[in-house]
Image (tube, rainbow, N blue to C red; front, side, top):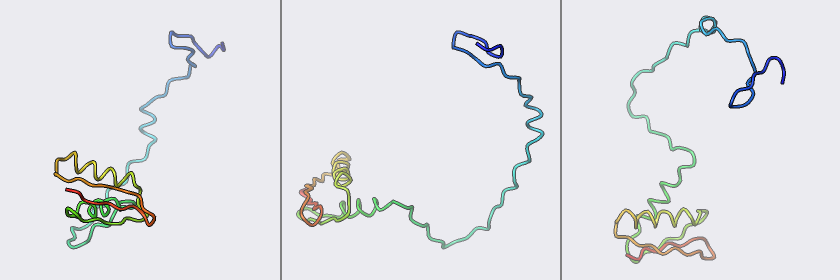
Length: 110
């Protein structure tokens, strides 16, 4: 154990000199003044990157009973999740999801 350390019930703590917080506050520069723009109307909200999930979910939920749709470049787990969520919400919908040679096909059963 070094002379600058002390032993406590939680282990060894290194003795460091205390920091004077008043001097730290004085040395900081003031925050920048906020800039607020004018009110504007008619500017569309851009899509968030990676939010294709909304489009895929809407395509699944748009199916009517007896219809099917083929999905390419979509994760099968995501499609299973949408089908499960629709059933858990009590929407009265059931889906069958199968992997086929061209992609993943979703059928709406009820």
